[in-house]
Length: 441
Image (cartoon, rainbow, N blue to C red; front, side, top):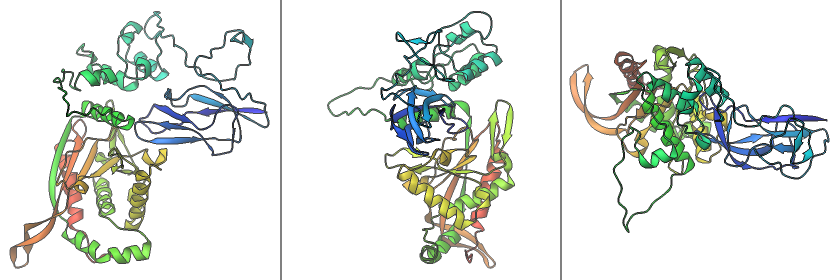
């Protein structure tokens, strides 16, 4: 007889919590190993949480729409024939007393089961608070010498006004100027702009339709505002002649699909050039933690993919520099197909170190993308268009019709200066222009 705790899984290096969308299994239901127990969502992806063992759901500690921190116990699974009541377990209302009584009856208390009761905070002095703070927030407060009185004044953007890591970072970054910058809460989004100024009032008439943002769009909006608030964005541009690439792809794409069963697009070719350039300029492949530069040895390229809903998601090709063009093509096609079918797994969108977005897909010639935090750079590729261009030949310069495209790189000017950003972008362009039109796979 044994009990196994089901833990809220870690979904990525910057994700500290997830929202419960649906319980597929209830108390008393049997589960097999790897059978889905519940569905959860983060600001990056929806996912399923499988059972680590075969057994019966004994207790559930959170309900639908609850926001739960990672590594928190969310349910208990009984194994080896332990008897389980089929009555659904209450959520957070179930708080055992010191003598084990609960609702007037004696109950055994699962050990250890985390119950999200109000925390007692004493970060700087002996004053206590009934407001709930996560261990992460309390540690940040202690490190920054923020007392409980000051902590209680920080507005929270989490569930039920809870203070999140983002709220703390926002507050700490503005603390020196004694200015408390409110987080982008649901209420604030409806009344104020991200800059803190009041938005112009919107007039409504009979020709107006009001559409509520879906959950993913709200999360994307918050992530984008956070990125612009965190990183001073600078964007550089280069124009590249990709005639060799276009002609090569047109020549081999039919045979390529017959031989390998895959359609080859321009995206894996762009990613190949990016990985080569990162090898030349590794300080593009970094993150910033306070004043510490975290240099990533793995080159994991995120590729922004449009969903049928119009939202974007960024699946990641791990160790892209270790893949040849065929391997990159298979990875790109697989991730794009599963993204459109909403079949991505949590690990598919984790650990990206650099992001590529193709604005040319929408017919745009260039773009100024927003950095995908905690990365420090993102590159956009524009539409490929035929244009007259000057071509240098052994007989002199001539004007010819060439396939041209713009590349743009947005980068975090705290850590990437113009020399590094511009040099990296130019190197990507040079690799694309030097593409071998007689290449074989």
